[in-house]
Image (tube, rainbow, N blue to C red; front, side):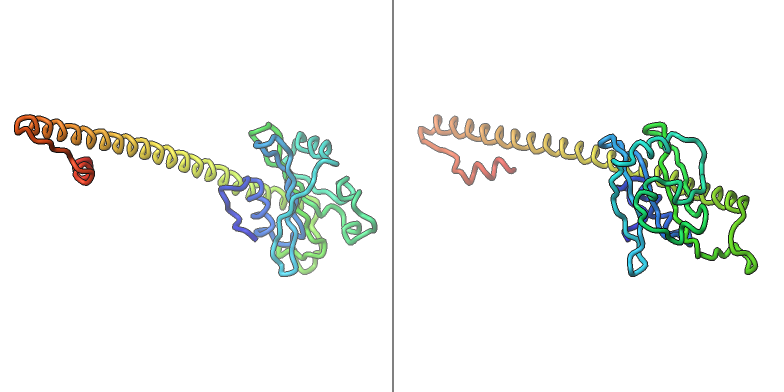
Length: 236
């Protein structure tokens, strides 16, 4: 998997990478976010590979665009869901799976997006067989209140990470912009100096030719600067 933190990627994609890496018990992650360049809705999923790494894949959202658009307008920081609550999961299922037997193991988290005043959506698919270290040996699953507390903690931690990424990305972009500005100014100043040196060198050549012309007239002899002499004088 690529580095979690990347200033060239969307902060939402960085959040997806971080979430599936940092939180135990996740089988899959899905991020739905608004992308300003192109003014479009983007979907990225994180799936485990055979070597237990995470692979990011792009997903076509056209079929469920209205569903995701409406979900991005909803309020609430988190929500526990089952696959039956997700039309894009139900439509793709041909047979029942273990996910049908265990209710609401998908955590939906919403994160405000300032660019379009809606929320980006992060779906975290928890493995129903996963035994959390927070559960005692007697307990087999979380209660509703425990799942609510768990969702709050996860949302708070991921929000902190997301805000950090956004601020660092802004700082990096400002640094790049400032560096590019300085590079442009340096190049402009360099061009001015080179132009000045070129004009000064040409002036020296012309001045030397004037002196030779006066000497030639005074001594009734013809004298000219050689090409090599002009180069030496111009680069003096």
